[in-house]
Image (cartoon, rainbow, N blue to C red; front, side, top):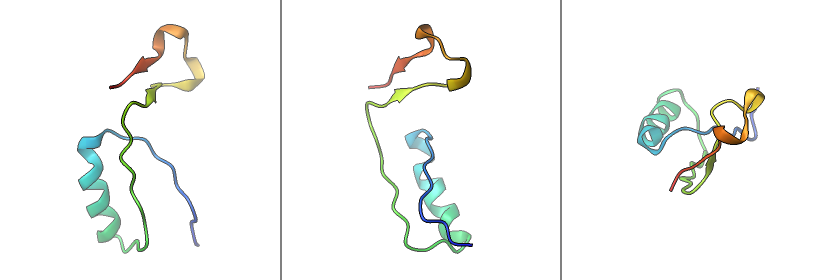
Length: 56
């Protein structure tokens, strides 16, 4: 099965581990993007205004 795009959000401390795991499992031709200043919602299904946090 070919996967064209996967979007996942994780903290920047896991970026290197994710890259190494993808390589170890034979995934080729991937791009990882570090994003800063994103809006973080821990659970979109039950989110209220108080659940929104802006990470800087």
